[in-house]
Length: 410
Image (cartoon, rainbow, N blue to C red):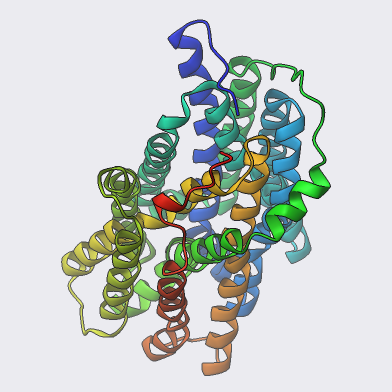
């Protein structure tokens, strides 16, 4: 991938701002699901299984589209793809907010998933297009930090806002923000330069990626490691903490915000540590194991002080960020003209676990307590799936390529 020169730094900043705004919007929609769907559970009397299915429905379409989206960004105009799909996200928000039926809610979530599928892959594509490749890992980590910080700010006030406005008006406001981001992408991102190279055989190159065992291990690792954020933090942390502390929605969302704040700190931190150390496998392994231990402590220790739980959530967030290094590894595994497609493949496996585990935990809760009044013991049993996944991810770390094993063709 050749970096395209941009005339002035301001233009480059505008490109970054548009792309990162879409990623922030995508993250906020995904990570706020627990609060929004928690309110819908009470409003529409949904079971845990139905809530899990509704929360995971966004990820179903998101996962399905990742590889096609990567191919589109390798071949088509980044400006149009990002602007159109930010607009599609906002349409999904409006449909979701206007729905009085479960079917309408699912349609809205599917539209959000279809639009947001273009955010991260598109952002990584324009970073490679317009910025030096040596800055890629840091800029991805820094942008991820911004995403978590925005999520933290939103979640601290989200419980109160939803209680005052109602979840429908909250989602309408999110839809208006999506329209603004769509305009920002159209105005700030230039048309992609036409390539003079012949169009590569994408079918053959996709097969090449699918045959790469390291790419599968890398994607499965990030999928199992990332569920601490996308499954626990984004959906089940809020209701779990409400039960553990016998607290309010607002109190639980503030505590979850501490976890996202820690995760925001950890992403660029692990990026910098990876650059400093000669080996990254020990770094990633320590991240997985420490996150597992801290999660088990949160789950089973008799902690009832909000300050102590908030501190534990923050430290756990600080330990979990090594999953971002999987995208740097994906860059090393792919041919130079198929980087976005490889990113899409990695992202497919990264989010494939989300609908599976979100729904599985809801199903287990319904199995353990069929009355719909879930106890702390029910959550402790159902959420054991998360440290189990982290332990499997720890084993996969041993098979990830080290820095000295990079593909010489890249």
